[in-house]
Length: 219
Ligand SMILES: Nc1ncnc2c1ncn2[C@@H]1O[C@H](COP(=O)(O)OP(=O)(O)OP(=O)(O)O)[C@@H](O)[C@H]1O
Ligand SMILES: [Mg+2]
Image (tube, rainbow, N blue to C red; front, side, top):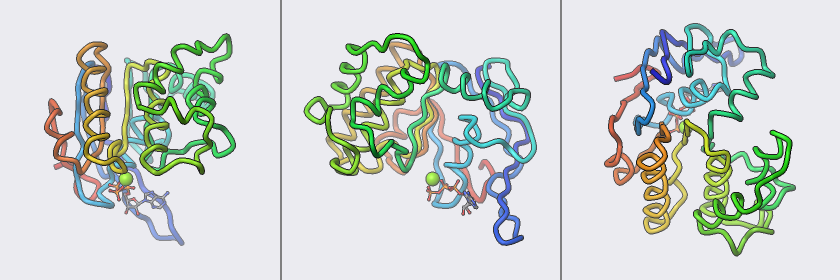
């Protein structure tokens, strides 16, 4: 078992009102899985991905990844664990606005310290079709181009697990197909585990398993 989620609940507090985003979610994910998360807006897809990616901690319940309970890790060890094992493609991209495309993609490698493999960075940027945009900053790119920078940044470290929050939402169908092809091949050839949320039928078609989510509960 690569990831096991046990009785996870996540609530947010807004003006003293408790908002339940996830309620009693349990889930098991094997290494090499290609899993699609589907549900309407507000269902809890991003929240579940953030909890799986150790970006948010559950209010209660446990998330174990590679045999380690993430609850037992402090912030520094969680960051290191994330950097080593997880690539995250955010719904809102989370690019660094003052860095150009190359620097944004290099960022997770820079955090590790040591020498940055420039040819690796360039080949990943090439794989998302942005070689001509290396020196552009995010505000000099279209929404779909920014999405592809976010994808390249998640791939550059060659993580075991990639969590992708609507990775093709801003792409035209042709560019979307190329990106899907890239993710499917990474899964098949490198055994990378994928969990992604999507409204895209073309992407869900490739999933080994589709998990439905509604009002914070798995269907
Ligand atoms: N930081 C937060 N503070 C308060 N409430 C939040 C926060 N993040 C999410 N929520 C609430 O949790 C619920 C689930 O949100 P989430 O973003 O996970 O939905 P989603 O399925 O990703 O929706 P979408 O398809 O629109 O991206 C929603 O009711 C949302 O308003
Ligand atoms: Mg979302």
